[in-house]
Image (tube, one colour):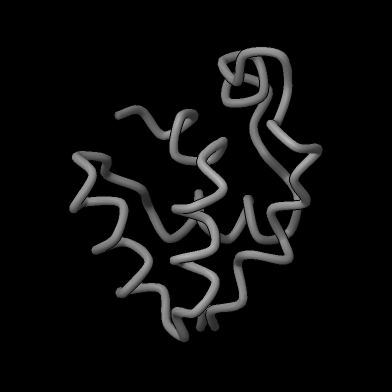
Length: 77
């Protein structure tokens, strides 16, 4: 799976919405074969997806998903 596919997978998003820390979220992505940085997760959580990521999400985000509602984990910076 790709990062973009996971960001369109409502089941996966619901799964990570229960996670409380960034390490668990990274492990969930890794279990699907995707590496994601803390910086990327922070940008997604804040609604600041990169242009490249947005361009690669076919037809925009499925279900009109507001990713911030799924990304409830804490990121210490």
